[in-house]
Amino acid sequence: MFFLPSLFHPRESGWGRPEFLTWILNAMCVSKAWYDTVMCTHELWGGILPSLSYAPHWQLACERAGEAPRRLLYGDVATWARNDAQVTRAVSIHAEGSCSSWRDFGELLQGLRLPHAKVLRLRPSEHNKPDLLPEARRSLTTAPSLIDCEISSPIAFDAENLRRLVVSNFWVDQLRHALSKLKSLRHLEIHRTRSVGKIDWTALISQTNCASLETLIFWCSADQSAQLQPGVNPIPAPCLRKVDAGGAILLQSPHVRSMHLENVAWQDLAAVLSASSAASLTVRSLIDGEPQAEGVDDLILPVNLPLLDAAIEVTLIVMKVCGNSCTLQV
Image 1 (cartoon, rainbow, N blue to C red):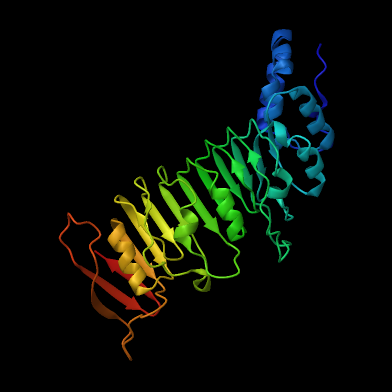
Image 2: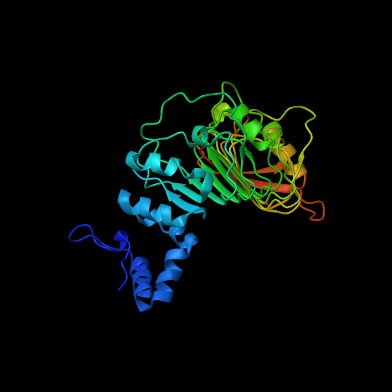
């Protein structure tokens, strides 16, 4: 007869036990050898923490985990303190739909070393987010194993293996600082950037090494996007396949499959197309010189622009204008 940990017992009528806990329970009842194996498998206890909402059960599993990496799930405010105490041991940290209140996770993690962390999903509800967020740069968070991160508050990583980064609510200088520390990104996505004036996206994105970058997405309003600076050099991005840009950016990327541009000026569009090749190109919201035809809803207009690919002898780009939207087809 073995004494099963309390987390395997319903604490009230109708409490639903996750199916995998039932499987573990059955395994523990097979024999003492299996019981001992489960009790001594610290990684298992660290891995089941997100499924335990009852605080005593969570604490018991955390103790059984010992020094093993944890998987953490932030829920309501009552779960924050216990998770905070374990972040340096976490292999993954999640705070998304389950976290119904805003929290500045960048502030929590700044300056810490996260030796085990591989995945961070830190995008809590923003319904009570303050209008003003700190503008100061954050101390570096060291995360040598981090591969994938989504975060909605400013942070800067020393993470040599980071492949995917999705950020929002950064000030421009915070973004510049964060990107300058990353050398191996394949997917970069930027939302709701905070700025005082217009953003020079070419200068900003050039802060990171784009040699491995495959996907670049950034969105901003038209009044945030600066035009290309005269004589600016394109950013080398030989692996880039997808661009979804909310403003003008000059990239040297010969193998782009899909390019979507918004809030660009005519002359910037010409420069962009001369530097990059794209199999599919869509442009919306030209910010100056947009052709107008009184009383005409659809206008077919040929525009001579530099070629997307010198190997393809096409110099005519046909643009169909409908209101503020236009699709360019090569």
